[in-house]
Length: 282
Image 1: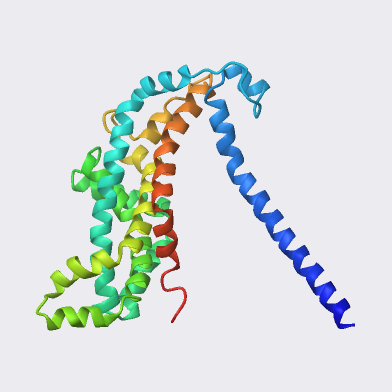
Image 2: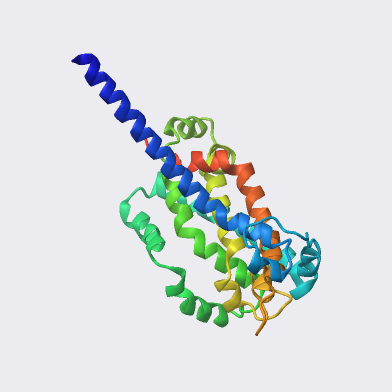
């Protein structure tokens, strides 16, 4: 009887495991399918995109990338997106790290922390009009500084939420030893806390870069000139009024996706460490 029960438990365990892997496989396939379609469509003529959507192209049209790069000032917009994303990430890391350190070590009450965390539940669409009014009064509409500040503010709440949980896992004995050696709080923060917090900083930096790079709404509202447009906005402008050239549009999308994929590949280990920090108490 015990052998039969063990056999049944083993069969049920393997069945559940197989179903889990099947669900994960289907989920992964559903995620990668749009990317495959975009990649294949970027090297096809427009007629073949409709007639042979998921098949290999009969004619490889690499000129779509060349035309997309030249059209709608994609090259200049690419450099703008690089500048906006990296500058806003650097500013965000500095501000969020300083605020998180104070919330994790100095003002450890829940009121101020909940105030910042509350921003996660408020969508950017709900504050876009007040943000635009503030930027207009400060004279920052249609400026590079305005779009950088908007990207920084949009990611601040989530970044503080992640970093506070990470910094609470740092042993206080490290700071106490630094204070005994005569280190000030500012020096302790920059020379000890920041280097230790690299996984958390990589996490918020990666998320902020991806969201800033993929943004269309803020760039569409704050900027109005082609000299300040982002890559996402330039790809949006590749569409025609009456005819959609999907070959050009998908080529522009591939150009836009490559930097995000590269950033994620390089920082995926730190990303996982930063997200799971504070999840398990020792």
